[in-house]
Image (tube, rainbow, N blue to C red; front, side, top):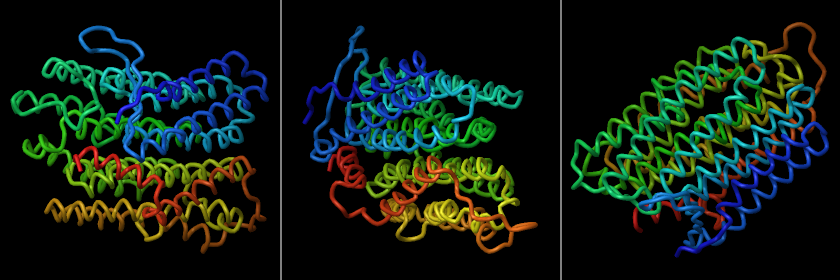
Length: 491
């Protein structure tokens, strides 16, 4: 059932308003913090207010403006978009609190928080985009709004990273635009409100070209190899930006675009007959394994986490490519599972850097005795990525494995097993160093990060455990993912 409602528009508009107030009045610290925290809370409440209806199958829609020929700006809060928006809006609250503590002595705080708010606004706009044009506009705005955050420190390294980021993502956006035009030319619509709008009568060659354009365009932001080069370089940005890139906004927007392409533009029935998703699954599997191997050899903690992100985001693409209900469930829930575990890790990296000045893995010997709660949160996130039961990552790997059996493609199981072993190979040594190796020189006294850094980290770590233990609880995010799967597969 579809209901006209302004809330899918209000959710992204709230962050736009917040950004405006920050740019206008942000020089006063108390007003800046007031607007950031208020907007983050109100946005989350707006999204949460639509959750009961979404779980009952209600879809909230709002048409902002129609241009011509059925093309316009429209918003649609279906179950899949709601899941992505719920993850983004919830983590914006945690990241805002963390960023306030992390950036409190930075001279460019006003610019940082203004563009920070714009990034989250565009992310929720992507989640609630009713059609490919609306999706594309917010997708490109996300690129532009993120650029000032990537180059925040304005060092030569940061500026170079910013140029690489723009080059990759703007070219990717061009692919998405051409693909969007071709979809409209072939069907007369670009709506994302259906489980597939293309049909086999268009022709295999033309369909393959459209699929390639959209997937390449979105894969650039999703950092699938070999389109990943911008992401490790972007780690020169402040840690809250890294968390934003990896857990809330940019790479998730790319993965979300691929999921929309598979489930809403093409549809599982059409793609199952065409066979286009098998090469995509192979590319995702290659990225999962290769990025994990590279991560093992990274001493810089944030770069190790960056390659881990490249690997973990590809889980979503791999699962979506299987075209089975179990795998689709994994693809959707991994938006939350990866986000919470990865943002926890970046919060830990930033807390360690701000508290001790350490940024490299080899420097972390004994840090678990100095910052036990912080490293405890990192351990929780590590176990989740490895796929231990009772942690969120186990749910993803379990459902991908079920999807592999459901599709009859057993080699996906080998990818999951290999990935888990590689995750252990580059995360467990950090935990071992932190808790079981003595610090070099005199042992530092216990000194945890300041509360604004520690509390969001612990909250996210707790949610990693909660998502791993509440999949059968009605009303939890897993239920929303199941509602999205029912729509996609017409169940």
